[in-house]
Length: 400
Image (cartoon, rainbow, N blue to C red; front, side):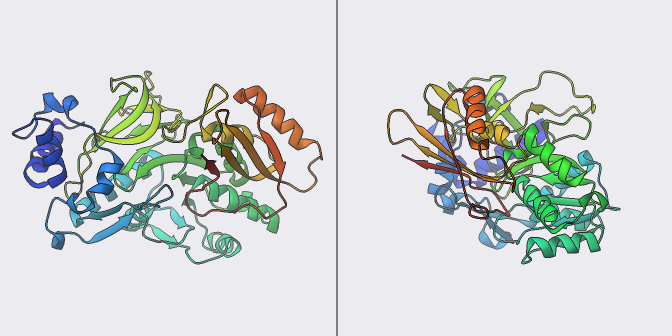
């Protein structure tokens, strides 16, 4: 982390940013905070950002040229503006991600989703374009048409969610397309924790015969982490551009806890000590790739707001995915959690591959019980009835 960048950000926010100046004044500051006082600054929450949408911008409106928003899957979408300078900073973060993934301007980059107001892979697309690489936008197409296009154009890198990488691979199987003959060598995935869940990434790599590289970021934060090629199953923080903390429930530094982020190059719309809600664990060992950047072992382990207590156990959706994706018989799934009673109940609906034995659901329920330590009802859904997703999947549904 650059101390100079952090100091510049603190002074800049104090002088120009309405939300942070108000937060810090309310906490007792009468001047710009010093670096040695940083850990005493109040944390920022998404609710605060939503409540102060008009006060999130450092400069007058004419300075901003980009508007994106969060998906709004858990409430009101959060809209985010960027200046040209902030946008270029995020493109620089993506160039680092590509370097970690060992891809370059000689690759052909394929983006199989409809470009909308979500920040998503917009910066990834423009960073590849800026490198001089062939960059293929595949929005507004069926999965079958996308497969034909990526094969015809000999795409070598796919950027998408883990869910869609699986769906596109399964579609190829259904159409009799041999993906082993494709030129794809990397799948850079984000938007969900699946890229760091061993069973999910194994399924993707088997379908595509290509290496998965996980990545995480947020609309309000920017492209922040990437898995290195040499050591799968974890994420490096781009520490030249982000200062991160890991705090336990009491707000103290910890080896495992919530990821708190300050971005250092997005001066037009920064977040400072922002509560991401991501549960992470610091890897204390040096990484074989040689990077000096902090590594989060296992990537994003779950969301603090996704945790549901079920019969004495803390349930995270990523744990269920880790079980279900081990079984090739499971084509798609949906989880319903009924937390309206003191003892929460869980229903798992699964679509199964044709020819799966009739007793498979019972066996799957037994595996869930043995590994996650609670009982779940497993119900077989008719083929094609569960939703498919291009962007962030919504497979967990809670009833409270």
